[in-house]
Image (cartoon, rainbow, N blue to C red):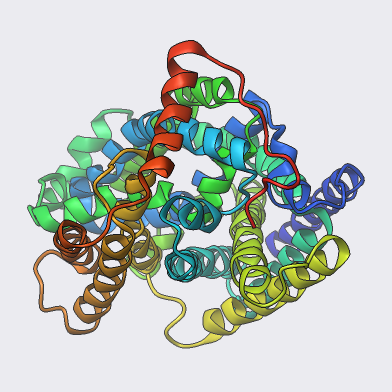
Length: 502
């Protein structure tokens, strides 16, 4: 059996597993939006931990980070710092508070919380649109990365276009059918699988390069890549975008909503560094730097974002077929939650909020399905365009940079009392405009995301200083909700049907 045939067989097995999981989970969904979007807020520790792990084990980590270490050397350890720190810190800082407000008021989207706290429908709409736009580049790299890896391993026998098409059709089908529970269990399956893949890859490469002697060999081949090259602003933007910028993206926010209780989120925060973080920090660094050693990974110069599949194609084609088919499947499992989140934002925060307040049940699910199909087609067409297949990390950085622009508004709800509705809206708009201008012109040394955030913070602070504050009763409601639970562990009563915020 050829490598191409084996890859097709393995990919078919993954697709069959996805379909089986989708069928099983679809039987557990109720007719409510809360069930379809956040799984009835019922996830325990390990399903949520594994689901978040699979979100990290996307093409960004499995392909893009390996390539960035190879191209940029140890400079990219900023990513490693983020991986170790942010998983626990941001779950701990934000997760519990987001869950508490979501449970109390029945939120299933971030925009609902923004409008409820700030009393601003316009801010809700702006926050939602920026969130969706931020997810598009992140969804894009899942399709392009998986398809590129598939094409590399099979030496073009499965072309890039075929890989993108397979992933797009499969993702849309699963999301339309299974909803949130389906994405969670597929994420869990892929999280375990790729945790094992990364451990095996580390052991294999370490054995071939003499373990820590690899760094000496890499330094002899190209010493410049084992010296931090500076570029502090670029490193800061990378760190901030991939930490706090990633955690306010809609699909991560909705994972917080989905937990059974805040203690689940606390356990996820405690366990994550011992499962997800060190794998993300150390494995890509070791293998990416090892690829600098001449002859270890043929073709790395021409296709650095495919180091892992190129490595196994050279030495263990059978394992390579498993890895590459799995990478495409992992890309699909990651984009699932992002696509579902984007669809729920359009359905809840745009269509139901501004056009049809009585939208419920089957009609709401139909709107979600139309949006899923439309967004899938949009990302598919971008992936096929000449501009769609750039390096994975720079493309996704645009999405994380947009995510950074959501941070001041979100912090106003969770921690900072001084941000006003007009300040939050003005800062968000100004930050996005500044990001776009810098991305187009390249005029600022700070980079697009960091430049946008700096403008955002300044505008938010200035406008908040001269505009009406958030209703004091609303501020007191949220602060009391947070403090009462954390001080007394008082039970949180969910919203009644009349209290649910639409």
